[in-house]
Amino acid sequence: MQIPISLRGALIVLVALFGVGLHSAKADTGSITLTIYKGGWIIGGSAGGGTLFFRGRSYRLGVGGIDYGLVFGGSKTVLHGRVSNIQRASDVAGVYAAAGAGLALGRGVRAIVLTNQNGAILELSGQQIGLMANADLSGLAITMR
Image 1 (cartoon, one colour):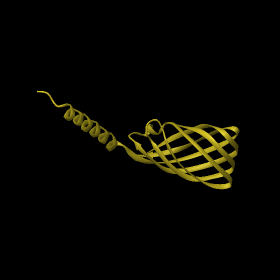
Image 2: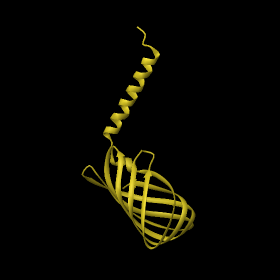
Image 3: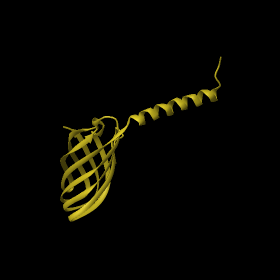
Image 4: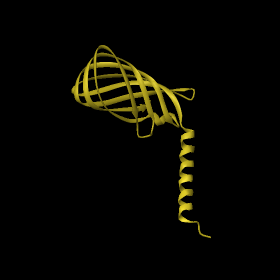
């Protein structure tokens, strides 16, 4: 018995969608807090740490990165937010890339949405303190401690 090509294609699509649905059904959310110290002149760097709260447990995080473009000054940024589309805590670890611009003179507000290679989505907002002007490309790496 042969299955018509159109029916076979429809079955393949249905199985693929079902698999994606199962994958998404297992994805979960958590909350995250990051403290990032940033400084530089043309080339900048950032370092810091944070905590991921996921499924009733807390996990310590390390943060580091590099910026290239117009970077001048130094700042401390404390971000709080939500991490989504993760199945396990280690999905947060990875490299996040962003292009952005900002100016902080004293105290400022910061908000950003980032995604890593594992599909983790960070939605963060918080305060930036210091003197910092930037229009740059930046990379941020988060590691589990």
